[in-house]
Length: 374
Ligand code: CA
Image (cartoon, rainbow, N blue to C red; front, top):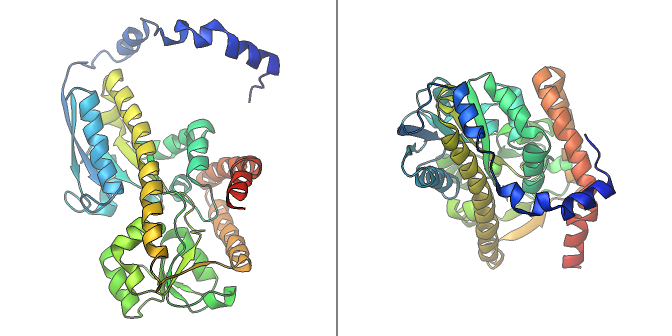
């Protein structure tokens, strides 16, 4: 990375070329020259696209976010690019969205990249991994730390172009009808927890049970499972888990900040004129900040409702349980990267950034939160 000296930094921030009108003047030839590279692109052509999502129709925040993205793109393009949003299962089954967009059945998809771990193991590092980075840190890695370029490289092999469009923030640990006082209490625990978190629970002696969203409540109520994770206070409240589980554990070590994604068929994306590509990129940034803000606001509202309920006990996982889960998570991730060079490349970048940003957080976020709550 190019080092910037203090002198140069001070010179730059006082320079008229940065603060003055010079920065706002766009070079007039840029659009023309890029269009010459794609002579077949018609800048006035109208587009009617389909977006398939992995969420139930109008699903709070995630599904709403997909609808807003489509709305914003249409609005910014003055109706030139219209997008019809389909809920999971409306056009293709939710978990076939990746293949469908890759093959051009629809131009756009909306989901979370760890759903596609079966296609390429490296995809999961762009969503969330146990003891990974939080929302702010993931955005920093993706936008400013080379993460998005790696993501584009991984998806390019599937004829897709990915965009981060949101983040769940730190999730909750889940709803338990059994107390977790030591790592031994995970032994024999039947928990609904997908992905890498599930593998970690499995290696700790529990069983990770997969069940569809609609069946989790009944399974927990009937004791088919002892515990389930879902998202955070807002989505968990809507699922009604507080009516049938006693302990609400935190933090969500398995999903510390899950990135939500939009992906576009590469041919469809490349066929767009530059200004529509730019509108899509801008809408993706807008969606990211909207989604992060909605999660933060709604989760804090609904946490209040849960705290006020005397039947619910909020509990922090004991330190030694978290420590052990972290060790197992490292083993699970090391196993993945040892057998897949693409995962290794992505994880090396991820881990290097995590270590760097975690050191900074000791002096920034962590120190501030400590000061705020002491
Ligand atoms: Ca979750």
